[in-house]
Image (spheres, rainbow, N blue to C red):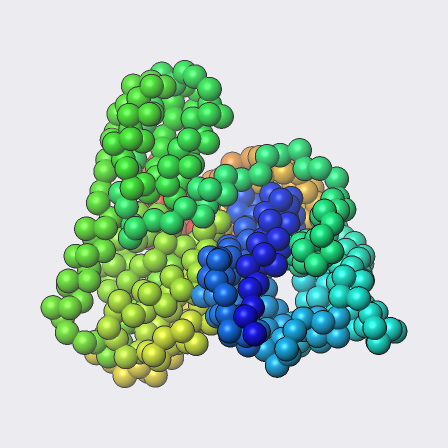
Amino acid sequence: MAVRIDSLVATAHAALKSQVARIDALNVYPVPDGDTGTNMLLTLESIVKETRDKTYEGLEDATRAAARAALMGARGNSGVILSQMIRGACEVLAKRDSVSAEAFAAALEGARERSYASVREPVEGTMLTVIKDAARAASAEASADEEADLAAVVLAATTEAHASVRRTPELLDVLREAGVVDAGGLGVAVILDGLYACVSGEGIEDTFEEEESAAPNLAAIHAEEEAWGYCTEFVVTGFSGDAREFEERIYSSGRSVLLVSDDDLVKVHVHTQDPGETLSYAGRFGRLSGVKVDDMEAQVRSRGEDAAEAGERDLAVVAASRGEGSRKLFEQMGAVVIEGGQGANPSAEDFARAVESTGASSVILLPNNKNIVPTAEQVHELVDAEVHVVRTISIAAGLVAMVGFDTEGETEEVVEEMREITAGLRCAEVTQAVREARIDGREVPEGAYIGLLDGELVAVEDGVEVAAIKLVEKMLEGGIDIVTLLRGYGMTERSAERVVEGIERLNTDVEIEIKDGGQPLYPLQIVAE
C-alpha cells in the first residue's frame, strides 16, 4: 500500500516554526543562547527534507525513513530527545497497517518509553513529562470508545500536553523561580498541535499570547551550504542607514554570523558562499576596513588531502568548536573540527561526516558543550568507526582534554586518559544576561554579567572582569593549580590581563594561561585543574 507522510510532517514543522522564537526565549538562565526550539525545529526539518514528495511502499518504510532522518538531524539535548520520541513512535507504527486512533495512542506510548530510556536520569517537569501525560490522555480516549475517531484522540493528547506544560513549574523549582514553563515541553505540545491540524483539517489554535519579539531568520538558520564557504570579517565605520535591514540581510547571507556594534561602527563575522556580494552590500552603509576573507572550503580540502597522505589512522578526534582561535588550537593539536557551540549545535549527521573524514577506525568526540553531548552520543549508530565520547562541556575544557590525545596510543588508554583529565576540571563561563531573571534567589538585571561555575550561578556583576575573578575565587576554595582563560568576542587582551592580575592577587601560586578562542556569546570561558 502506497504511503505518504510529508503533509503530516510538514504541518507539525509549520506549527513548531510559528512558535520557535517563543520557545527559544524560555531559558531558565537569561543567557544569549536559547536554542531549544531551534534545535527541535532543525530535527523536524531533517524529516521534512527526507519525506518531501516521496511515496513509500508501506508504513514500515515511511516510518523507518522518518526515524533515521530525525536521528541524523538531531541537535542539542531537546533535538536528541525529540528524535527518540519520533523513533519510539515510528517503531510502533511500523507494525501497523494504518494510523488509527488506537495506533496513534500506542505510538505516543512508544515515544514516551523510548525518550525516557534515552535519558540517564529522567527529570519530571520537562518534555518527558509532557509526552508521558499526552500518551496517557490519548490512551484513555482511545480505550473509552472502541470506535474512537483519530482526530479526537490527537485532540485529547494535545489538550493534555498543553495542560502538562502549564504544570511544569510545579514539578521543577528552577522553572517556578524563573517564572517560565519548560521550553522542550512546549515544543512537544506545539508539535501535537500541528498533528491535530493535519488530521482534523482545522487551524492550529494559538494557545499562548503573541510574542512581542520577531521570529529568527529561519531561512538563514536552515540555508544549505556547500562545505564551509568563506569566513568573512570586516568593519563598517561611519555606519548609517537602516540597522535592522542591515542585520537581517547579513544574517540571511550565511551562517556563524556575529554582529557587534558601537555607535557608528559595526564589526561583522559571517561564513558565506559569496563574500563579494556581502562586502558590496555592506559598503552601502559606510566605509569598510579590516576586511579578511578565508576560503574555508580550501582549508577543508587541504585537511582531507593531509589525512589521505597520512594514510589510514587508528585513532582520531573530532571536536565541536566556535571561534577561529579555538579552531586553530584544536587543529594544531590534531583534531578535526566541526562548527558547533553555544547557539549553534551540530547535528548527529555533521559529526558522522567528520568521523568518516578522519579515515580512522576509532574516533573520540569532544562535544565541548553540555547541549551537544546527547547528539554526540547518538553518532555511533551512524558510522562504522568505533566512537568514544569524552563529555566535555566547554571549548576550554576540550582544549585541556586534548593534552591527553596520542594518535599512536592504544585507544582505550587514550580515552581513559582524556576522561581522567576532564573528570578533575572545573568549568566556568561569563556571559551577559539577555533579560531580567531571578535565579537561586538572586535578582539578575538585564545586561548584567553573570558567572556560571559548573552550571551554577556564582556571580552577577556590572563587568566581565569582576565576574571572572569571583568565579576563580570560588574555584580556589576547592584547591586548583592551573587556570586557563579562553578569551572570546567582547573581551580585549588588556581586559584578560586585568583578570590575570586579579587572580594573582588572590593566589600567587596558581599558574595562569590565556588563549584566544574568539567564541561568540561568551567573552570568557575558564577551566581550572
